[in-house]
Amino acid sequence: MTTVLVTGGAGFIGSHTCVDLLEHDYEVVVVDNYSNSSPAALDRVQKIAGRPLIAYETDLRDRHGLDRVFADHPIDSVIHFAGKKAVGESMQIPLDYYDVNLGGTASLLRVMVEHGVHDLVFSSSCSIYGEADAKPLTEADPARPTNPYARSKWICEQVIGDACRRYPQMHAIALRYFNPIGAHPSGFLGEDPLGVPNNIVPYLLQVAVGRLEQLSVFGGDYDTPDGTAIRDYIHVLDVVEGHRVAMERLHDAPGLRVVNLGTGVGTSVLQLVARLSEAVGRDLPFRIVDRRPGDVPALIADPARANATWGWRARRDLSDMCRDAWRFQSLNMAGYAG
Image 1 (tube, rainbow, N blue to C red):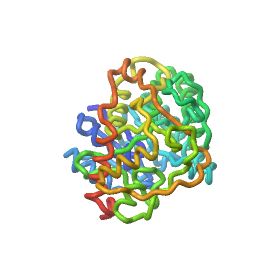
Image 2: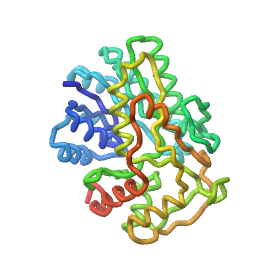
Image 3: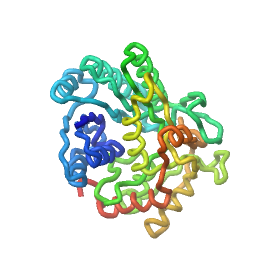
Image 4: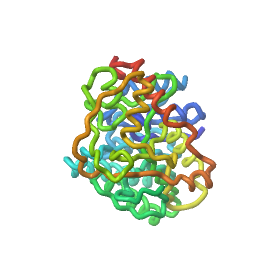
């Protein structure tokens, strides 16, 4: 049976990926330092899937701890989510982002090579495209990152590419996915960040249940139809399926390949607020404030490469995303701690 190491497996996308892998008969080993997640997520993963996984509380920069994981388990493939991920925060603590994201990735690659593991799916980001035109973005569009988070992801891609050139037996895919939201349809697993959420949907949902007062919409003067930023929102389960398909197609070609995961549909912040308000059943309060440094007006995917090469496509729409996200929050008013 194939064994997959999932770094950051207790996080939002990582935990949903663990469910999917277990349900597809993979053995799963998780490494997470729980800096923005909870072991409770992994308990829920195992209950949903009806199968166990193995978890280590380890920071990827701890090479000795990571070496023990590889020594104890016959790892076949790695799906790498672990890292810091907030645009605004990265503007405030940029060195932390480079330390965690680059340092963790370099450490992981070194230990993989030392243990003869050469298959990697890297959780990259659409933010790499930066100040892009409003058109849907293809993988051939230039990287123009505008903040330390995006730059850290782009540099990680370069580091992985260098590793692939040095070790020709390595196969890697960097998935530049757009804005994942939603939750597991059971309502038992979702996005439950520690502290005040950095992402819009968990923030809005905490407004909905009274844990926060109102949403601050950063920027109402963008060159977009309603003045707010446009993003390509994608259901977390579609992102998860994309990661599994990518892992299963790693040996289609050597070296590093870059693939977008998105719907190809742009949604403004105000449109998202309105749709989520519909799911909740009442208007959610917000106020428009100044733009946030590092943000860009619009990011929309062209997912044609994943569609054509793998037959993957996003199957869930914005209503599905908002419904599932609200189901999780309404059933878990205080998150996993409730």
